[in-house]
Length: 76
Figure 1 (cartoon, rainbow, N blue to C red):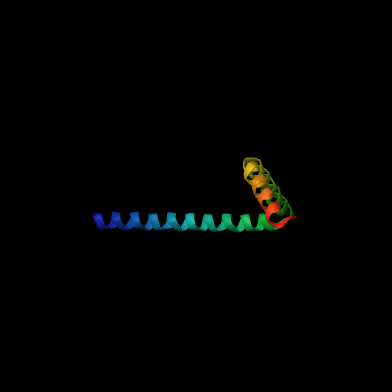
Figure 2 (figure 1 turned 60 degrees about the vertical axis):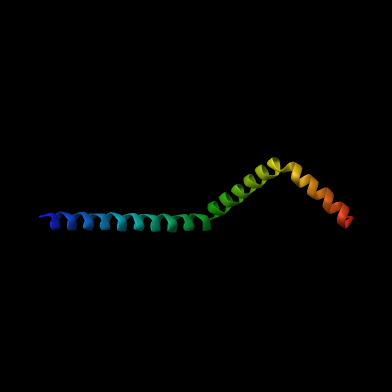
């Protein structure tokens, strides 16, 4: 009887894992489809803009010192 219960446990565990893999695969496909659509492209642009803005705000001092050093070194 223990063999049968073990087999059933393994069978349902395998089915659950297969179902989860399939769900992840479908979500990835939907994400790719969304990101290639016009709305997805606009979404990516907005995310990049927001990330860049936050980065520039957080690292304003480092950026300013780099610009000064670059200007001194290359005279531009």
